[in-house]
Length: 447
Image 1 (cartoon, rainbow, N blue to C red):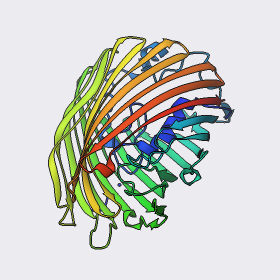
Image 2 (image 1 turned 120 degrees about the vertical axis):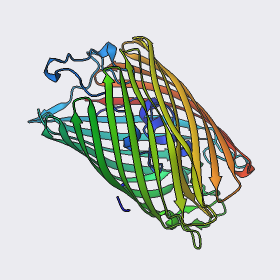
Image 3 (image 1 turned 90 degrees about the vertical axis):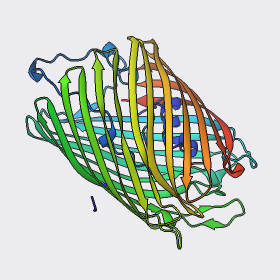
Image 4 (image 1 turned 90 degrees about the horizontal axis):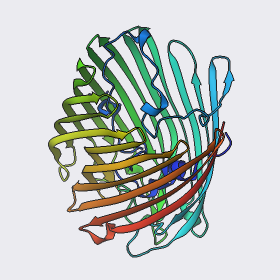
């Protein structure tokens, strides 16, 4: 089966980019899932189907939007319009302090890094169909450890074609040159430099609505090409074993009992052609199936809860089959219009390859609060706990994280952000254990 600009706030975007050096399978609340975890969109919560006349639907006011997504009048970007296109340039610059840049329990070094991150978003203003593109780059330069310097660049896009009023074709793609930071789950054990890799991915999905019933079917591919990194003793660590493609085919069915309650079933199958190390292939085939309920009780409580089964069969007999119950839960509670309380729990199966080939089953829980202190001041606090079980080696890890941020929007054209993040990884193999603090300030300019 073969189916897969001016300144932006230092806290938000700087953390989004620079925190890859300690990112886990499930990132901190508010951050996008980055490769190579392959969390498929088919399992993301989808809104309940519209049961009323769309032409009579009212626009949702800012105060009824989630705190992190709302744009208050007077603070939204202006943009540059050219015909039916809108362009939004932005530029972020900031400083990052890391108490343990090598994510080590024996070779602890602290350092300060300068971050520079321009971006440009372009999207259409057509009444039907649409294209949304984002080009961004980011450079991180350390003061005392230039070997940790990295430059990332990526072009992401999505598009939709309204074939009929209830049938739409959805597409997305990504072309990127990224770096996997020292201390990540799949980073080589002794690496003291980021691991560069190129990513090309794409997905095509057809979505059809039948009044209360919504169905979707699609397929995609992710292609990885890894470079080499360097060990503490100066030797080169070849990462070619992580090159390969991941093909997926996915489908989902949603049924709305009412505007407040729905049922869904989602299935994804995959074939992973990953080179692995000599004598230890990382090729595998598998699937994940979830079924559950989507809720939307007014604007106070919304979420999705699903349970099912996942199985990944690895060609390498030392890894074997990783199988068992699977789950995914996401909940948003809004006790007031100024506060969002969110919760997320998920299990996924992935693979790593450094000096040995292994499979990983990761269980993670996150909880956080977003508070609109003022219209232009947002305070966010979150925490997470993750348990990683390795197949192919006798290793079990737990990861605890806390994340706090303050974003102050000056006006439509600028913002300042502060953040603090703490990460602690405990492993039954002491080499993999470490803890670190990251503190940063960002200044953002946008238009």
